[in-house]
Length: 278
Ligand code: AMP
Ligand code: ZN
Ligand code: FE
Ligand code: FE
Image 1: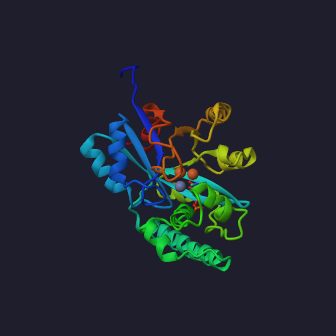
Image 2: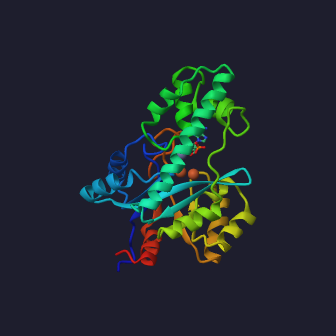
Image 3: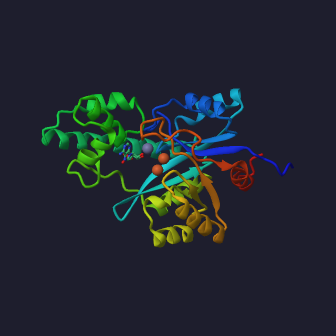
């Protein structure tokens, strides 16, 4: 094997099957333009975009890794859990995700009614149209607010209406992170803590490692150099997989773009070797 392998991978991307703006095939095309060797499609609580991406990836020569980003809650804090290489066609898995997505819809309905009670004239139909069948999230509500001139920007919508501290906020279905680890493993996947720097909870991270966590997303736009170094040390000390990616939402979450954070192919190769994937 050549010791000069310069292939790069972006292992955290969203599509319009959750709150990304781009279709899976567009994401793959962009990855190809950027010269990426592999990308992971990791939508929030959804796997519907994976097969299209794999198909287009085969045509274009971009390896597409099946993944998910599960939304978990621990002591009222949002914790995201990435799962790589799950058996994402399993009917039980799909049934569970359907339930999670139904709960997301009910939650959006509740948030819109709360906004209506506060005199903000927004209708759920428009929010659902924006989501277009995707796993419905606050970014879709935010976009509707901006579109109606009820908020200036997405940030403004989150700050005034949709953030935790706001009166219209409704929590999502509670999935404890330890349960997500079990769920991902149960379907043959590799559970990885997504951007742990966003909650900074060492005790929790240690507890997750004890509970079977298999990797840490060390490289992420929200991690500065110090945090990156910190999580790299933890991952190495515990012999965990090390992943990273741009968390690109195709523009819906600001300027983040595909490939702005990548990892060497050997990081992906380590997970593939574990899974016995050639
Ligand atoms: P939800 O899963 O419905 O609670 O929505 C959370 C999502 O909103 C996260 O994936 C973030 O990417 C996104 N988000 C959080 N804050 C903002 C913001 N200020 N602008 C755009 N998207 C945001
Ligand atoms: Zn998102
Ligand atoms: Fe996340
Ligand atoms: Fe994400």
